[in-house]
Picture 1 (cartoon, rainbow, N blue to C red):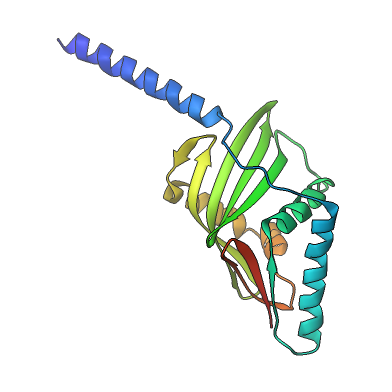
Picture 2 (picture 1 turned 180 degrees about the vertical axis):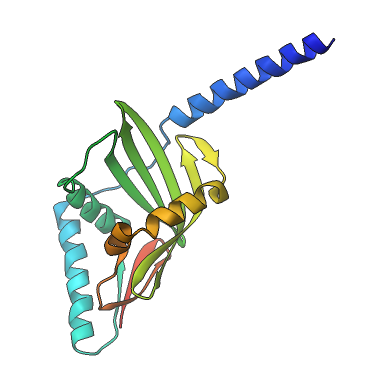
Length: 187
């Protein structure tokens, strides 16, 4: 009897492991996001408006669309940072603005295999640094508890090199997602 129970548990664990691997390697379904050079220029123009308002001492708010944000992201991904490469490299990224959350889908090439990481969360600004609080994490189509990944993500985002990347220009006071748009407020 004990041998039969052991066999059932072993097969159950094997099936559960295989299903988890298949889900982790599965490409998530995402809606396409338009990107264009015009939208990237519009992103730059809005940041310039915000900077000009800050210089004149007039607070201003600009709203950046999902298309503008992704166009600028795609433009920046065309020139990989120095030292990129290694065993894992970022191949593609898409950002979606839904309600008051940012959902990023990142394609990472790891040793010749594409892996898909989905991070969802809230954006804010704290002491001139962009903050991200995760609410959703998936590897492929496999949901992971955000609390299990949060400490690793937090230590990576708080590292000195990432803090430099997450530093906001001096003209920006607040950042948030509102109504499916990225809202930036000048000081």
